Length: 200
Image 1 (tube, rainbow, N blue to C red):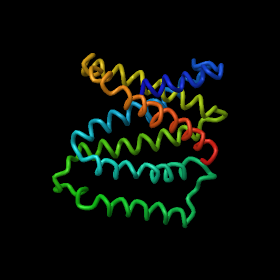
Image 2: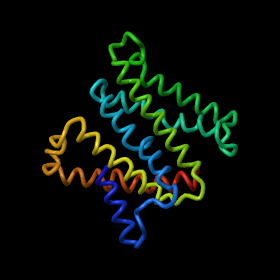
Image 3: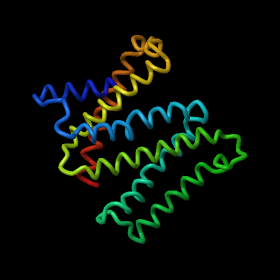
């Protein structure tokens, strides 16, 4: 999270643009940082101690379907037609088939892990709908704010819960972390925020 925030800040500074929030911009940044950043990341980290990565990924894959349902309720131009409703229902049925018996109470799968992943999917959906609803926002600045308000709370949580030892392995994994922070975090978030504002 911090590497993503630093990469976004460097991108802005090279362009001669400010990195501090303007007016009430910090509210959108804090919301996105919570619902699309540190909040779901903490939930995923917990869930992966309870369930397999494959099962977690399948549950998280429902997020776009949840976005479609929420967008239908919030935006007139994103109403679900009969055809779109059928598509969303097929999507949910497909996810149910993929998850299969693992979703049943007696399957031996951790219910708390599965619920944490469901909360993750809902969190991403809420964050994406919120990003879509922020009027006249610069998508690049939303991406910057998301990274800042994701990285800083996540770092504070790691220090509070684990202490400095949480970062002991960082030097040994610096190249991988840089790749994840820049290529798998900062750049995709920037592109995603632009996509939300252009495509809905």
